[in-house]
Length: 455
Picture 1 (cartoon, one colour):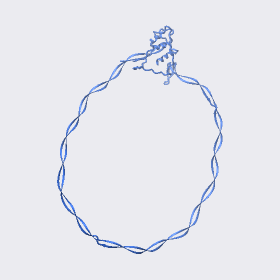
Picture 2 (tube, rainbow, N blue to C red; picture 1 turned 120 degrees about the horizontal axis):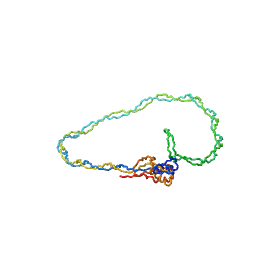
Picture 3 (tube, rainbow, N blue to C red; picture 1 turned 60 degrees about the vertical axis):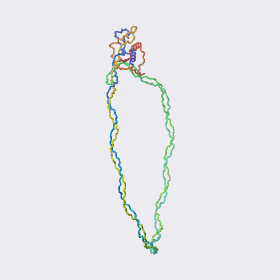
Picture 4 (cartoon, one colour; picture 1 turned 45 degrees about the vertical axis):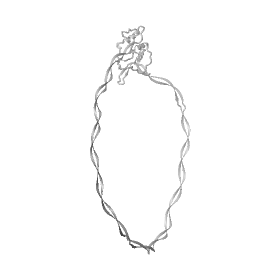
C-alpha cells in the first residue's frame, strides 16, 4: 500500500507539480540539456541480519524415592476365657401340716312366731261445712268519650312547569377548497465526498497556542462538493372560501301553568256519651252438711309356734404329712479356648518414581529483514538517446545529501508473512497510468520481507 502511494505521488510530481528544480551533482550522471530538472523518489530497502532467540522446552524427568508403607497382617490366637456355670440340685423332704375342719351339727328348736293382726272397722258420720260465694251484680252507667277526627280539605293551586323544546335554526359556515396547481422546479442536489488533492504549503494558526504553523505541501484528502440537478414537482395551493348552509336544533326552555289539587287534613274535637256495664262481686256465706266415712283399726293377737332346725359348726383338728421338694444352685468354674484374630501392621519398603518437569532453553537463529527508506533523485523528463543510463545510475548511487535516515520497523518472528490490509474503495487514490520511467522503478523494487528459521 505504501509503495502504491509513493508511485502515485511520483506520477503527480512528474505531471507538473510545483517542486523546485535542482541540478544533479552525482558523478555517475552526466548532465545534459534535457535532464537538468530532477525529482526525489523514496524507496524502501530491506537489510537482512541474523538474530538469536531461545525456545523453551520442558522435559519430564523421573526421580526414584524410597517410600515406607504399612500393610495389615491378620493372625489367629487362642485365648482362654473363664466363666461360672450354675447347676441346680433338687432335694425331697416331708413336713407336718396341721389344719382345722369345721364339722356341721344339726339341732331342732321351737321358735315363737306369734304376731298381731290389725283389722279396720268402717263408720259413717256428718259434719257441717261453711263457705263463702262471690255473687256478681251488674250495673249500667254513662261515660263521656272525646276523640280527635281529621277532616279532609281539598285546595287547588297553579304551579309553573319548565320543559325544553328543540327549535330548528339555519346558519351558514365557511369552508375552504384548494384549487391550486402543480409546477415543475429544477433543484440542485449536492453531495460532499473526500478527494485526494494537492495542497500548497500555507501558514495556519494553531488552535491551542495561536502561533502560526507551516503546513507542508502535499496530497491531502479534501472534501469536495458535487451534485446534480433534479426536476421536482411542487404544488401551489389556492384556497377559495364558500358558504355552506346548515340546520341545527337549539334547545329552548318553555314555562307552563299546571293546576295541582292538594288535600289537607284539618283536626276536629268530637265528644259522645257511651253506655257501659260494670260487674261488682258481692260475698255471700253458705252452710252445708257433708257426710264422711271413718275406718277405725282393731288389733287381734295370733299365737304361733314353729319348729326350726339349727346347724352348728364344731371345729376338729387333723395332722398330715406333706412332701416338700427343695432346689438349690451349685456354681462351678469352666475354662473355654476362643480363637481371636489380631491385626498387626508390617512395614514394607518400596521404590517409586516421581515425575517432574525440567525447563530447557534451545537457541534458535533466524534471519529478519529490516526496512529502510532511501531517497533518490530521478530526472523529471526522460533523456534523449544516450541519457537513459542517467536514471539507472542515479538509482544505483543516491546522493549523500538527500539520503533520509532509515525508519526502524519492529521486527517480528513469524513463519507466515503478515497479510496486507484490504484498502477501502473510498481510500484508494485515483488510477493514474504510470509513465515508462515508473514502470522501470517497479521492476527494480526489492522483494517483500521474508524470514528464515534455523537452529
